[in-house]
Image (cartoon, rainbow, N blue to C red; front, side, top):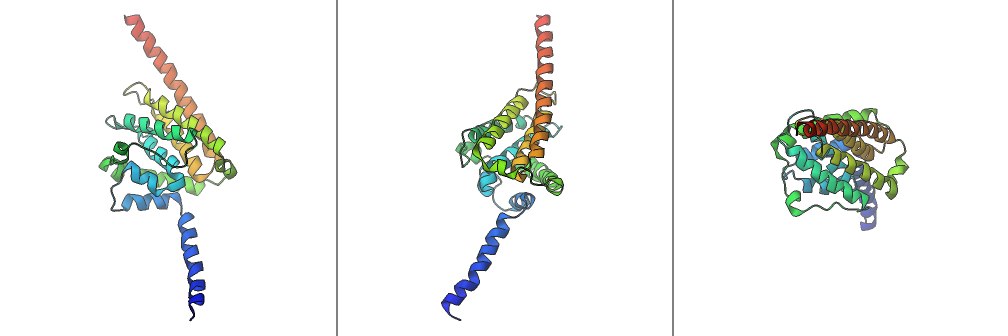
Length: 219
């Protein structure tokens, strides 16, 4: 067999492997990252998912406060990081930048052993029912920047929710849905996230105003 024939034989196989990797469902990529032997840090998450790194990072960060369970204050740290990540989407950055301290921060056993597997299960459910709708929208910078503004607002709203009130759950759920809409290229999920997140933000404003009035009346 000549060298030219060998190259021609190998080239389609290599191309197929690249296409297959690119076409893998997001849930498969996420589960592979979860089961890898490498340290599971926020930095490694952003490196693995390439062009999906912004949405994947926000999905992970905001999924934690979206769970109506006590998280020991870790959710506020993740919400702050989510604001920074979403801000870079607004600026139109192509690659995710984070301070070295944040990049090296391990997610911990609670996140990698319980929360991330839950994310994988939910992502699979979304993948089964979601259909690419308005995919061209996510190929343009302006719509992605608008999504970044929405995510910044929802992450900020969740961070400003009254402590121990559980009100950060709805804005966080909205952010999760919007992040999933970017990953799956589905504008229906974007609309759902916008509705849930807006409702949660209005609820936080209403409750926060009522609490402020009560405190003011006391003094």
